[in-house]
Image (tube, rainbow, N blue to C red; front, side):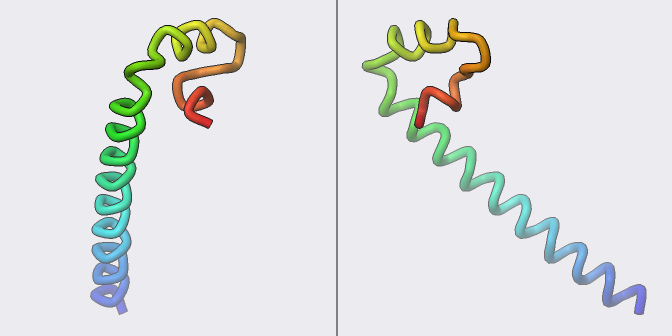
Length: 57
């Protein structure tokens, strides 16, 4: 039974690494597309509770 759990954990960690790498790619693309609006993003980030990710919405 322990081998089965090890297998499942490896699968889960592999999926997590894949998902995190895709998230990194998406964030890079969003940042690239928002470069022309960097002044607006910076100003929005001065609002309490608003961060860089919030401005993407």
